[in-house]
Image (tube, rainbow, N blue to C red):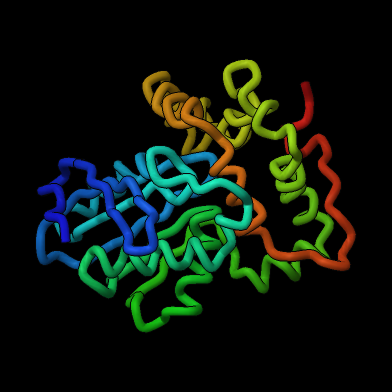
Length: 244
C-alpha cells in the first residue's frame, strides 16, 4: 500500500491493479485515519474532489481515482471494456490496494452509478455510502420510464452516445461541456452556490479534456439504466447540447 499525502497536501500515485488496469489517483490525509474513497462524475476528473479531501484530511485518509477511461488512468479500447462489471472490479481492486474495506464511499453523478453497483455487490466492503446527484438505479429507471420531466432532464444521454459526440464536444473550446456547469450557475457568483468556475479551474478542465473524451464517453452506456423496449428519450433544447 502506498503512503498517503499528509494533512491537506494533495499528492498523486498510480494504483496498478492486478487485472492490468492502472488508476491515477489523488490523495490526502493521515496514515491510520478512516478511509474515504471518492469517485468523480462526468465531465470531471479526480481533481474535482481536491477541496473536499483537503477539508477531510485532518480526520480521514482520502483517495480519489481518475476512473477507467479518464487520462492518465488506463483507457482500454471499446465500449465493452466499460461495462459496469469492469468498473466495479476496478473499485474492488483499488480498495484492496488501499488495504481493504473503506469507511465511506463518496460518489457523484456517473461515479455514483458505479458506487451503487459496487455497494450492492460488495456491501461488506463499505461501511457508509454517500451518493451525490445519482439516484438509486431502480428509482432512476422508473422515473426515466414514466416521468416526462426526468426524460427531458436525462435527454443529454442520447447525445453522448452519438458517434459524433466527441467531435461536437470539443468544438469552440468545449462549449457544450461548459454547459454542464454554466447551466447551473457555475460561472455566476450571484447564483446560489455559483461562481466557482474560475479561469484557473477552466484550464484544469481543458487539460483533462484535451487528453481525449473517448474513454469518458464510453462510460455513458455503462452507467445508464437499460431501457430495452421503452421509448427512446429525445434530445431537446433543455439539454443545451445539440444547438450549434
